[in-house]
Image (cartoon, rainbow, N blue to C red; front, top):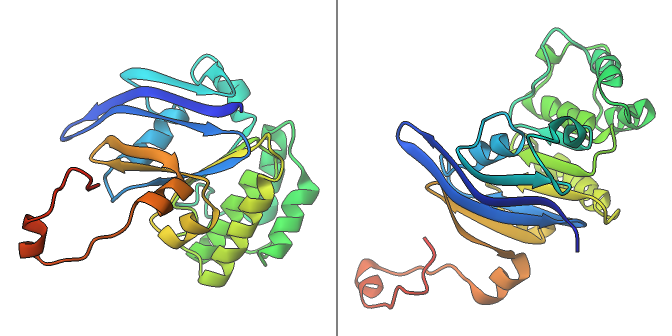
Amino acid sequence: MENLLEIRGLCRSYAGFSLEDVSFSLPAGSIMGLVGENGAGKTTTIRLILNELRREGGSVRIFGEDNIRGEIRAKEQIGVVFDECCFHGGLRAGDVGEILRRVFKTWDGALFGKYRREFELPEKKKISEYSRGMKMKLSIAAALAHRPRLLILDEATSGLDPVARSGILDILLDFIQDERRGVLFSSHITSDLERIADFVTYLHAGRVVFSRPKDDLLDRCGILRCGASQLGGLDKSGFVR
């Protein structure tokens, strides 16, 4: 199976934090959940994938090509949604469509309009007047409307109510029915990941604890609840922390 994304030994250091030897792959036709506590390195990893930060070691290959040498070609085929809306507050949804029509060769205005109506986003209202949930919906509509092969979402559903979030998850599942596509989905909402993820990569303190199929995790792992005295007497070799 073709890998849309291959990360090997990725490293980047800041004052007080290091991302070290991060490795995982995203096969075509699948959704990978990227999980970990705040500060674990999820957003740093995504920014390194997108070449918004320069890596200090390791490699990132997107669609089989190095993410730096092939950056322009890759970004034509990537849709990205961060946890904050990146569009200027003075713009309207219609303005966003007009701008991105000039950016992406594959921009589909009809598809953008379809999502805008489905998400009930007013075309003439300024983005500064949108709720957080509306801003996230606009970002998701824009990310999908140029028909990317790879979607990268960083906590993109965190501002949505449960009904809207469920609708977005349905769209992601529909997106990968084309098995040439894939999704990297950072989220702290584990129920979302349990519903749609095929693979889970868990980051802790800048390191990959595991990266494996979700079904394997459900079969082999569980949550242990016990008192301190009971915990002290257990073999911890199989613990994941």
